[in-house]
Amino acid sequence: MFEFFANIFGYLLELLYNLVNNYGVAIILFTVVIKLILLPLSIKQQRTMKKSAKIQEKLKVIQFKYKNNPEKLNQEMMDLYKSEKMSPFSGCLTAIVQLVLLLSIFYLVRSPLTFMEKMNTEDINKYVSQLQEEGKQVSSVYPEIDLIREYNFLKEKNPDDQNIDKLNLQMNFLGLDLSKIPQQNMTDYTVYIIPALYILSSFISIRMTTAMQQKMNKKKEQNNSKNNVIDGETGKELVVKEESNEMDAVMQTNKMMSWMMPIMSISIAFVAPLGLALYWLVNNILMIAERLVLNKIIKTEEE
Image (cartoon, rainbow, N blue to C red):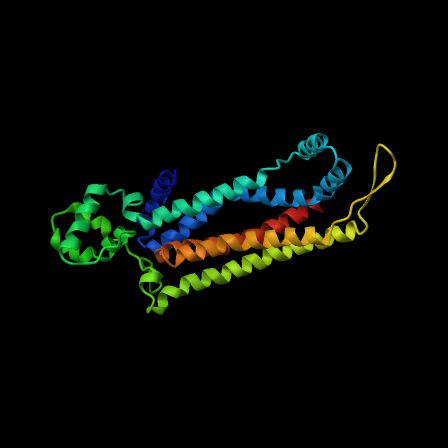
């Protein structure tokens, strides 16, 4: 599945590369295009988050009222989601899309000759064998990146091979070689620039998410300081109290989830070509800008 999407993304990246003739600029434009394509999903996700926060109190009342009747509880909860035109699994779609993007673009950046230049396996294996015969090291994980680095050597060895020019990708971007892998070039300080900027942008994004959650929790506490609700059937007052340990558990889970994706991405970024880290960096910057704009638009709509 990931190779299927990597192949589709490869057509887009190749088109952009042919326009600008620079791999780094093509990656940036590619990230912008993908972000624009997914913008409707981002807008829906942002609105769902806002809406979900608003119905939490109603859910708590239902859970308290029917805590001894699981069947009725499930029915009432489904009716609430239906009346609010929401799905309890709405957040899953975004998580699935993010995972598919993460792995598909990793495949694309790891094997640009296969998915971007559409070279066949036979030619790639032939060039790899030529490098190995000359005693040159070829990575078992990123052989295509090594072929791109050795373009000049292979060009001399195969002067009449028309396919060899597909290896001539311009990987230099603002003085950085996007074909380099931090793990393999630990003495080269330049390989840490993009991952460091990515870590910084991830920290900013996490701080924004945490601040938004704290703001929503504070607002709910102000509006429902006593959490007292009148039962419409009996007229009796139902007291719905949030236990501190439950709140701590929820906040801890949210905090863990917000850190999970950046940590996983950073781990991959240090063992993958810098082109992947550049994609994640640009994606993070666009995501921060997107959140700021969408929050303002949704807040204006609510007002």
